[in-house]
Image 1 (cartoon, rainbow, N blue to C red):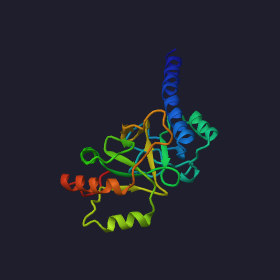
Image 2: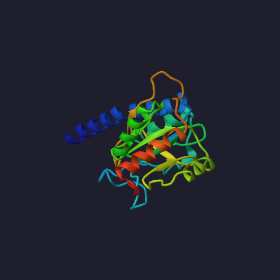
Image 3: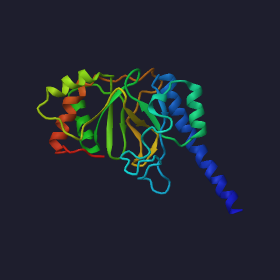
Amino acid sequence: MREILGRRRGLLSQRDTGPDLLSAALTCATEWQWPVLPGVAADLRGRSRCCCPDPECTVPGAHPFDPGLLAASTDARMVRWWWTNRPAAPIVLATGGTAPCAVSLPALPAARALTALDRTGIRLGPVVASPTRWSILVKPYSMAQLGELLYAKDFVPGSLRFHGEGGYLALPPSETGRGTVRWERAPLPGSASPWVPDVEAVVDAVVDALTRTGVSAPEL
């Protein structure tokens, strides 16, 4: 009897988790035209561990593996098939192209950067937050554009990361080895593809926030 009840609890847990992730993945793919794919799960034996073959994985449960990043799709049938078979899989966004890119930084200076951007009247779009890092979604940019932008800076902290063409980002409501991924600033409900700012509009504020807080070394 215990085994039957345990099995039922497991199925209920999957049922509770699956539709939220499937619905969110479908919204990204079909309404916003953001290509997504399921990420590799965190190891159930230890949430800080990843199910991928890399024992030193630095983003456990928050990256693509099988399928690879190039499989990212906006096709509703493909998305439904993925999350029907893997209902708890994290949602991974393939950044660039038709999807936004992102600028990410540690959580504390990220909160200060958002305050600074609000103070100067700069409009922000969605912001993705994990327990350790926040990611500000921005319009797609080229590596040449980013290189020119960073070259003009006297100093670029090493904890600042850019998710551009060929990159990826875990989206809400994913559960990863680092914890829950959520919207710090959610897309407006009922809108078409969410509006995002140019990368130039946010870089000054995030560099200043990282410099002020002294977070210059890379943080996971």
